[in-house]
Image (cartoon, rainbow, N blue to C red; front, top):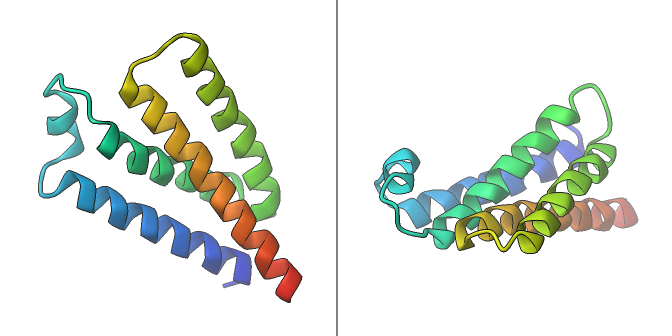
Length: 115
């Protein structure tokens, strides 16, 4: 496994732990159906989904390039939800995804500069 793949795996595992901690023992489907805003759960969920997207997009290619591609999509989602005054769950979800991709890209740049 390359350094970049290890960094991605670490970030994805951390996002999954954060999501598990936020959701407790409840399933995300059950929580979503409650009808109550859940930004504290949606933020780590967005982070995990975005990192999983980076993982899928990077298959057979560069994780750094995948980050740039995925970041563009998540940044557009943040802008769209802000412009539409979307609910707190959508804002948290898209922001969580964007923040996770940005943190991953920063870690990858840091790793490259120390290599």
